[in-house]
Structure formats: C-alpha cells, structure tokens
Length: 237
Ligand SMILES: C[S@@+](CC[C@H](N)C(=O)[O-])C[C@H]1O[C@@H](n2cnc3c(N)ncnc32)[C@H](O)[C@@H]1O
Image (cartoon, rainbow, N blue to C red; front, side, top):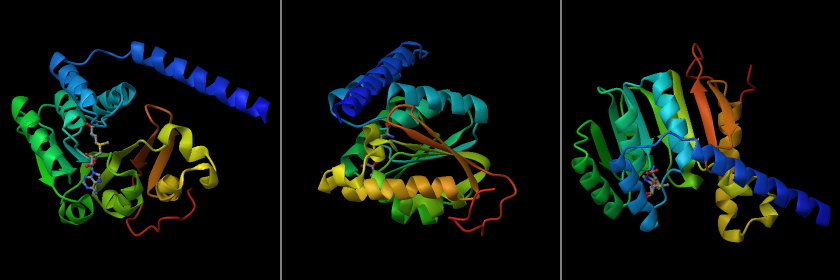
C-alpha cells in the first residue's frame, strides 16, 4: 500500500511539473483577457485553465469555426477567448443560468464590443432544444453532473466534422477513483461523469479522445456519414 501511495504521489508531482512547464510555453493572451482572467480568479469564478485556453486556441485555428455554442458562460471569459481568436465573422451563442454571472458576462461582452456573442439566459436543459442550426465547435463547461443530460441535444447540434470539447472531465483525477473513495456529495457527479465519458466514447457518431489538458478534457469529433439515428451505446467501428 505504501509503495502504491508513493508511486501515486510521485506520478501526481510529475504531472504537476509537466503542467507548469506546459503553461510556461503557452502563447500570451491579450492584456484585456489577462485582466478578465485575473479578476475572475480573484472573485473565485471557475474559469478555464490556461492549458485549456491553449487547446481552444488550437481548435479555433484548426476549425476556423463559423458558429460556436458554449454551455456555461460564467462571466464570459472563455466566450471572449473564443471571440478574440475565432475568425472575424464567427457567431458565438453561450448559455448561463446564474442571473448574476449572466449580468456580469453581458457587461464584459459590452466592454469588449463583442456583438457577435449572444447570451441566452436560463437552464441549458430547457434552452438547448430551442437552439437551431448546427455548430462547428461546442464547448461544454456547465454543471458536470448535467453533461450526460445535454448530450443528445449537443450531438443534434454538432455539425459533421465539428468538435465537442467537454471540460473538467477528470476532476483532478477523482474520476479514476472507485466510487467508494469519493465523498457522498460527489458520488452522483462521479457516476454521471463516468456515464458521460462512456457515452461519448461508445457513440458511433463521435470519435473521442480523453486529454489530460487542464482538469481533463474530452475531445469528440462528429464523424462524417454517420446517420443521426445511430444508437448511442452501439459499439464503435
Ligand atoms: C465552469 S463555469 C463556466 C466557465 C466559463 N466557461 C469560462 O471558462 O469562462 C460553469 C458555469 O455553468 C453554469 N451552469 C451550470 N449548469 C448550468 C445549466 N444547466 N444551464 C446553464 N448554465 C449552467 C454555472 O452557473 C457556471 O457559471
């Protein structure tokens, strides 16, 4: 047991060192974004980690998206990262259910003059079925226990060849632990997140890779030529 714990601690330390090193190599963001990030962190608002920002910036270059959907705006930091680095004509729709955060996000969007961002206020479970059209990039960053609930609508809205990026899927490595070692309060989230990771991995319409980036990200690409009525849970080919 001691061996196992020592090995686990050593791996975690190595992981943290790699993370610090990787962050040190990240390209700088604009001063406006840096200020917004700093303020959000000071106020305890949970926002994407620097490496997740780097991953999003790479995806924006790769996809050159025309339409982006974000679930979980908070105060608008990640939406503004996407707004800053996406092509100039890209439309961004972002959903937030917390009134105060939505109000602050609106102020931040105004400050950046980000007219191409539309904030939809309310519960994504209610809003998603009303969203029309398809998206090149969908960023899932809301309550972790709800991802599984949003998935059918998210797949409906994801364009063929489009990317679904789901953040915080490893929960500091907690997702690897047995459900019995997770506190009672977190057990439901743990179970639902495991279900979610199984669902995005097994759904034949998606090709998914789990990344250790930030707090863990699942990157799923909507496969071309896969019928919409393909059952989730079918074995992948
Ligand atoms: C991690 S924060 C989002 C951070 C933001 N994407 C960023 O990096 O700047 C998650 C946000 O999702 C919102 N949220 C959680 N569940 C939601 C739901 N069902 N519908 C809409 N928003 C939700 C929370 O209020 C919270 O502000």
